[in-house]
Image 1 (cartoon, rainbow, N blue to C red):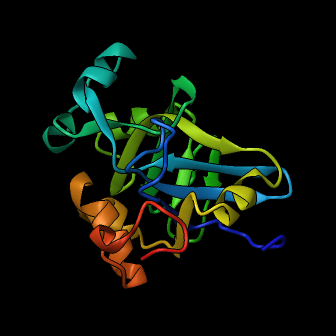
Image 2 (cartoon, rainbow, N blue to C red):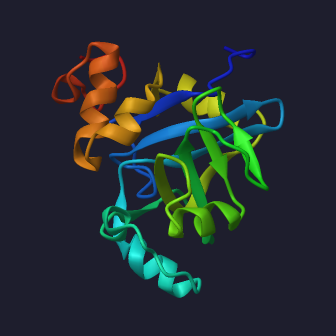
Amino acid sequence: MDNANFTDHFLIAMPNMVDPNFSGTLTYICDHGDQGALGVVVNRPIELSMEKLFEQIGLRLEDEQLCNLPVYYGGPVQMERGFVLHRPVGEWNSTLAVNDRVGLTTSKDILEAAARRQGPEQILVTLGYAGWGPGQLEDEIKQNAWLTVAASPDVIFDLPPEQRLPAAMHLLGIDLAMLSEEAGHA
């Protein structure tokens, strides 16, 4: 596991996850390498609509469908900063291409384009992100804090937030209710 790369994977918080930042979460890993890992929680909407967020940053959102979408808690790091998970990747000022289908953008140009209905087809906006130092994520996985599975963008972009964690579990062929809070017990 020391050379494992979990980019473009889901992290499924195990039932024994005591950290309130991640209890019950599904996290999408956008980058994982020697310097650590970066991801965003994709199943924890917050009490902030896209319309309100856009108002706060001085943009008028013209797309009625986007107006009512929630903003998400992306993780405990830099919670004052927005992160836009989107497909297709496109070309924005500051984008990390997770793969050839999904990107993570931190520059305002993507929000300006979305406000004008010229942004990516699908977006999920988070405040904050989840970060791990070198080797930290691997250690947490070894300690049974997380299950991992290759991600499906359809789970993120096509399902409501409450269905994303069960859908990721289904990718593994596991029912969340069957998991025990103790390691070594099913």
